[in-house]
Image 1 (tube, one colour):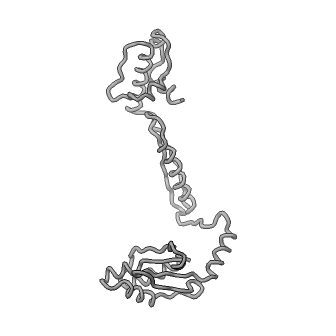
Image 2 (cartoon, rainbow, N blue to C red):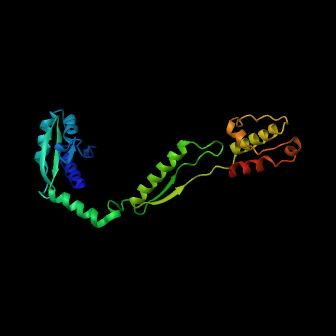
Image 3 (spheres, helix red, strand yellow):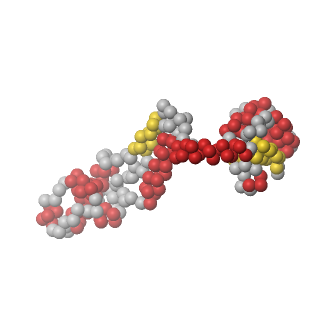
Length: 226
């Protein structure tokens, strides 16, 4: 329904030199203002430097809706155009919803298009926080919307467990292991000083145990498994 109304508004806008003009067609907050409303006339009036309500009257005069789509059109406020949908349109929509069930609204607009969506991808050198949970929910919702419109979606959670930063984290954890064992150790430059690194160290109860403890790489593997 709204697509048909929007297409007609675009046709009229082009006739007034507003081809491609971005206007709003939405449901009014007040139900007394109709089922849909547009600000098209005000945008055209600004271009033409004319009174918005006069432009709205000109737009309404050019609109050609079959009675099965729009039953009433009205100019309101500074130049909004309000539309009341024909009752058979509303009942037809209900019938379509019941018929299509859970697939109502699904489209093939993205058929043949592939989307690779990376989300969360938490930095493994730091603790998780609420933002990662938010990113997971938001990313999955966006992916679902793409799928709903026919796109072939790949969800990707990039795990960055290699490179300079990971080496620095492993060295930082190794320093914590030695410190726990009472051995002199300094966290390397650019390393990780946070308490989470201390909490996730590999426990060591004695200096001799630390001397024979695994390498920094093994320490990192133990950290990443937790």
